[in-house]
Length: 136
Image (cartoon, rainbow, N blue to C red; front, side):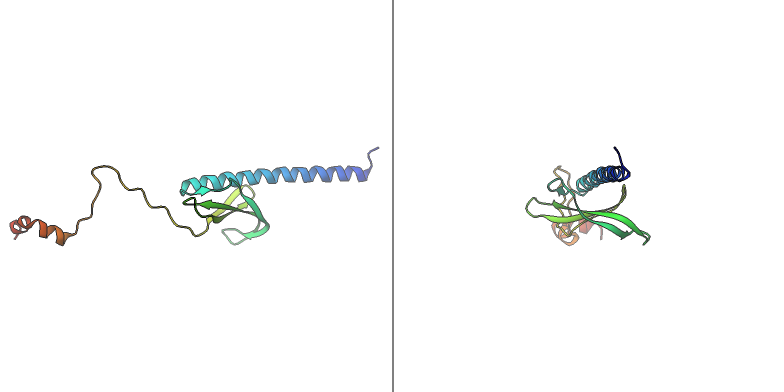
């Protein structure tokens, strides 16, 4: 027979299960946002993972305290060293993604024949004396 106490325990377990399912979905959403951000800024997400650091009140952009989940992750620039980052989530909304201090990769060098070259004017004048004579 289903008593009131048994019904309460059943509903409590169902509620906990639903909360865990919802939390897993938010974690997956945070992971997807971090993957996208890492690709955008040209760093590599390590371990393809985010880990819940805290759940509690956190100020939003307007300074209001809201319930937030903060997930930590690790990334690399060169593959040699790990750096820390975090993402703050207000429900399904990404509040911010922060990457710890890290070196930036060197910009790619142009590989075509018509690459720009900086020329020092004084040096150019010394190597092109005829040009100087025509304009005086």
